[in-house]
Image (tube, rainbow, N blue to C red; front, side, top):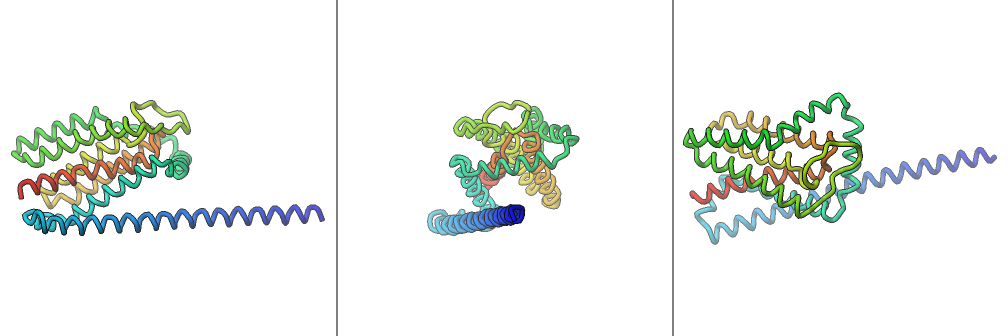
Length: 267
C-alpha cells in the first residue's frame, strides 16, 4: 500500500512539473507575441507620423523618403527593437532567458570549434576593422565616391563611439558561467558585434549604390559575418545574448539613418 501511494505521489508530482513547464512555455510564447505586436504598432505609428510630418513641413523630403520607404521602415524597426532590448536589460527582465540561451549554446557547441569562433571574433576586433575601414574609405575617395566614403567612415567612427558611451553608461557585468578570456569594458552592448554590423551594413549600402547587381551577394556576406561574430561572442562566453541583439540593432541602424540623412541633405 505504501509503495503504491508513493508511486501515485511521484506520478502526480511529475504530471504537475510537466504541466507547469508547459504553462511556462506558453507564457513565454504569449509574451513574445505580445511584445512583437506592440513593436509592430509602434513602428507603424512612427512611420505614418513621420510621413505626415514630412508632407506638411518638408515636402521636398517626402518623395525621397517614399522611394526609400523600406529603408525607413527597417531603420524604425531596428531603433525600436534596440530601445526595447535596452529597457529589458536595464530592468533586469532579460536575465533568466539570457542565462538559459548561453548555457544551451555552451552545452551544444563542440569544444573543437572554440578556435574557429575565436578567429571569427578576431575579425570583429579593432586590429582588423579599423585598418579595413580606413583602406576601404581611401579606396572610395580615390574612386571619387565621396558619399560612400563618408558613410563608411562615419558609420565605423560613430559605432565605436556608441560602444564606449553605452558600455560606460550601463556598466553591465559580463557572464561568469565558465572561464573565458578577459575583455575590456562592460558587457552591454557587444562592441565587436556592433562595429561589425555598422561596417557591414554601410558596406552593403555602398555596394548597392556603386554596383546594384552585387547587392544581394554583399547582403548575404554581411548577414553571415554579423551572425558569426555575434554567435562567437556567445560561444566564448563573454557576452549575454541581449548584448549581441542590441548591438546588431544599433550597429545596423546607424548606417541606415546616416544614409537617409545624407540623401535628404542633397534632396
